[in-house]
Amino acid sequence: MTATAGTAPAMSRRSWRDIADKRPWVLPVAVVLVVAGAWELAGFLGLLPDYILRPTTIVGDIVSLLVDGTLHPLVLESLRRALLGFAIGSAVGFVLGLLTGVSPWFGDIVDGPVAASYPIPKVALFPAIAVILGFDDRTRVIVIALACFYPVYLNAQSGTRGIERDFVWLGRNNEASWLCQFRSIVVPAALPKAIVGLRLSLALSFVMMFATEVIGFGTGLGSAIFRARLEGDYHLMWAGVVVIGAIGFIADQLLRVIGARLTKGQALEGHRG
Amino acid sequence: MLNANAIGKTFQRGRHRVVALEGIGLEFTRGQFSCILGPSGSGKSTLLHILGGFEAPTTGEVTLDDSPVVKPSRRLGMVFQQASLFPWRNIERNVAWPIEANGGSRKEACRTARELLGLVGLNGFERAYPAELSGGMRQRAAIARTLAMGPDVLLMDEPFGALDAQTRELMQEELSRIWQESQLTVVFVTHDISEAVFLGDRVVLLSARPGRVAHDIPIALDRPRNAETKKSKDLLDHHNELWDLLRVEIDAANAGAA
Picture (cartoon, rainbow over the protein chains, first blue to last red):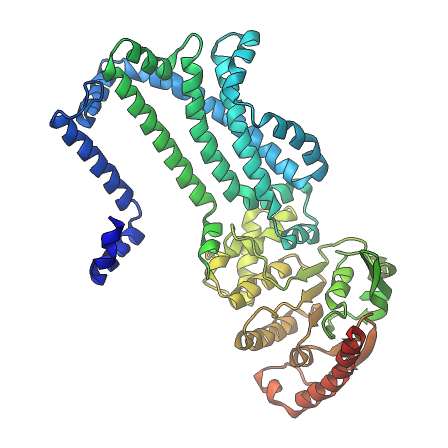
């Protein structure tokens, strides 16, 4: 594909570039449509095994599962878990990351335990916490929150490292209170990096939601997908996978748009020549 | 009145002790525009940081109306070489920030900010983000933000040093006009002789390291000063006189380095 680009007329390349610049969503959407189209065609021609359903079939299944009320209780249950864990873990990570970033001694206290526990797969803690609390919702939310803590903590902390000396001096010059400096300088300055962490954590919260629902006495969408596979119900399995993917995608885009609004000025700074 | 009494500053650079400033005694009377000129490495910026309370002198003390300056305060407003506006706030809210930080309401802060933006000639740019403005406009906004603190003294650390030559000329005329209207006490650090002569009621020439007050020269050009002033023979005479004096210091600095 790329090899032919060199021989394409300059004019058409320019217009492609224009479209890509003005409507950045066109290309990704086109790629998705092409892949889905190829998949659909392969299914139509009978080239796919029976456990891989065609996109149109999956969409139809989702609609009918929503209509008969099978899908949405599962989705809501799982979503509640994922978002609760994400909210708790990333909020703690955000605040601790910023505080350890601006206070060297506090950083020294917290960084050690964080670094030591970082490589532990958080799913591995699921049985350990379950021994104390049982395989219930609280345990799942705690495990999701633990996983979501690290990316936000590390990114928020690194966001505070780049705060300009002039901003710190400006705060001192204005005799601004500690809280005022934290709110109006530290938080916004570290926000672009913290948002990177938040997006990582959001994706992780979905991974962890699925993992914790499959292990133990499963509930929610994750366990429904797993059970569907065991029972050969590929319609429910695929519907579940696509719904998780779609919700994750929408949540990420929402976070991206909110983040872009909050850091608009900084994004402009990046485009400055 | 701002006073520097026998200010000295030494830095420890590994095993070496570097004397940056020595026995600086200066008086900045109310409403006076003082320029501090010196070869690079003469400790001009360090002196300004000490005057503002951002750094502590090794010896001596700074007093503002007879009370010692031991930390930065709103009475001593600093303008940095880089405009250092918050990139996440628009221009109006950048200028409003010092008032908000002092407990003022957002509404009141924004009203004052708009007035100050008018004073520095940035009407119509209230909603723009810093990244959308030119270097000169950003520095105007930074001056407005410092004025929003309501300071008695304006400390300016080569504020036009990062601007292109034409913008710098215009900004000097703007600053002269703003100062004329506000009657603030200004301490302005620069390495540009013409800038120092055009702006200052006096030019304090620092010696090569260690920085001492080598000369303190009154500039008797008529006020208000404008583009015409820059073409006058008086300004040129002052410029030449200072250049000769500065050259001695630069030669001394080079001799010390060799």
